Image 1 (spheres, rainbow, N blue to C red):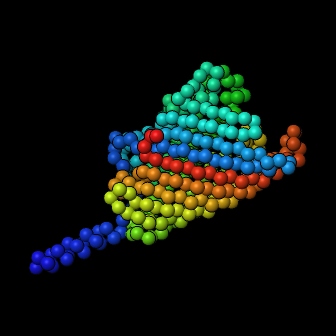
Image 2: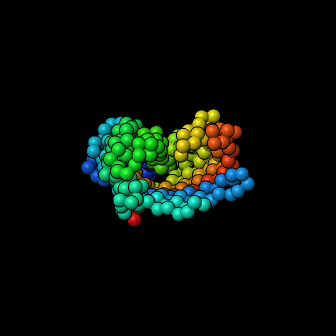
Image 3: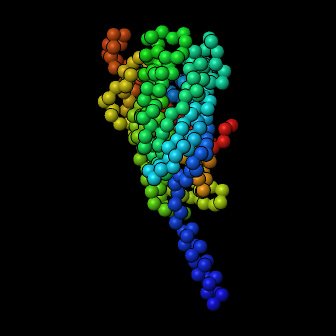
Length: 306
């Protein structure tokens, strides 16, 4: 009989670990960090010339769980620090929220971004259900910056809302957090997730994900994605020019997820895109401009501030 109990208990233990529920299981009052370090290389072919630009973005974002609801987690989100470095044919620039100065308007702007927080609701599957507070928050922030003309403020507001507004933030965050299966999975199981990216260039990502490893330290999820621009005939105002994109690409990623909280402990994402950017005709360029281009980026994410 003792042997029978042992066998039954063992079978129950195996079956309970056979299918694993992977999702966010966050605690009220706890802060979760997401530190990211990404480098994007852009090659543009313009009128017979090759223009190389490298952009590095480093930053830490804090997610403080205020409420735990049936539909998800109500969080206060705050940028802890932000650093941007850009190397282009025009030279090298660096802006740092931790080193603002009276003669460095854009570092001062990044510093002000770290002074603001906003509320979002995140589902247990990593979907942004609500981020309405982001609409207009950057307008208030830019108005507080000294040394900018009205025209400059208007342009910066438009760029910030395009990069950090509700739709852009939702797409950027979900590209990292919307990785969880809606049903329990076993080792080797696969599932698919679709996300919409809306930061400047609107695109759809279709990812195939697979659980490849599970232990007490982390669950390892690998992902392979196809990315294609959507609304290809729709122009967006970028840097004072109306531009539309027709691009395609792929991304591969590895995520190490905490098996208890579901929060991403480490991630590495590699993305490759190629296609054409079309600049709409204007008084300076009546016939417009067609720019073949490639983009490659590598991002590393950690739950610890570096």
